[in-house]
Length: 396
Ligand SMILES: Cc1ncc(COP(=O)(O)O)c(C=O)c1O
Image (cartoon, rainbow, N blue to C red):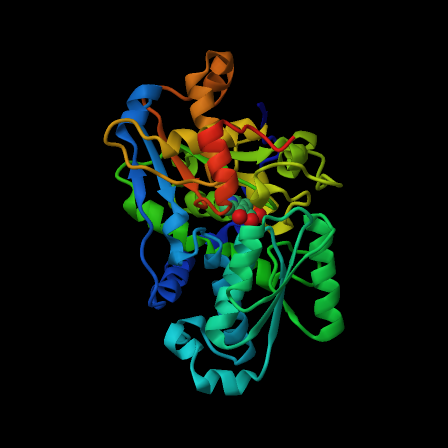
């Protein structure tokens, strides 16, 4: 496990204004209008905290999200809702679920095809939303994607293909096809001329952050959050930097697989440029296997995140095992590879004396109140079993 500190910090409030409490409340109102909406549990793992000699260890369990086993639908649904609202000249507040899926709105919109590239969770959320709207979704998955994740997207009536491309090239293919066929691209990577949808996706994750903020009994001193392109991490970091100003802000640590540690590399270089990882990104953390940071997310992280960790698959595997085998009456959390990485990193740093220096750098001690996001359940059950039953540690 490697750790780097973010060093370029202008604390530019303009980069997080769109993630303040007011925006998050509006996003949550939108999600609350969905009949399948339920607040996901925030688990207070008391016995784990005692074992690790910290004050509190909280984990938000997103496996309960909309019966879709991952937080991702929050972003895709809010982006699609906001896209529709903008297209029809409406405010998103006037487009709750029932109205959004109504015949009236469908007739006004006509037929739309939404397209995206995904490791699985995001595509499932986009396909699910398109299906609710009676619209079409086309989904491209990177090479090596899991059959179960593919099947789950197909079950939402999407046209889904596992390409022979890596994630970032699959994004480029989706973008080319959107242009060529007049489809609407729903992606959390941003570039010049493509900012609205990624911003809405990031805002969409605000529901998860706001729920955690409302549920948590004590102010977190430390947040560990995972990153693929960094949209989720941007959302969480931005929200909590708004919620707890100045020195009250929790210490935020971004966790990535070493095979796809683009945020870590960008933070390490600290030269004003984004640093990419290219080629095959071989990690079990499929949701985090993204080599190109989202620039909107990055601008939040650059200003408000504190540390980045680059870690091997065994850290995620450890997190999955610990969360899945709770101590005494702690709640059990079924956490997938990408979901468990931050908890795995925090646990390893606290439990393994080889990381005593990291503990010190991160100011982790008996007063620490840790908050992690388990962003997915077992979205690849075969691999979940191999890790938790058979002790599998990596794909390599
Ligand atoms: C379960 C899970 N967690 C975390 C992430 C990372 O989100 P982001 O790409 O916004 O960094 C993903 C992305 O697909 C995911 O599927």
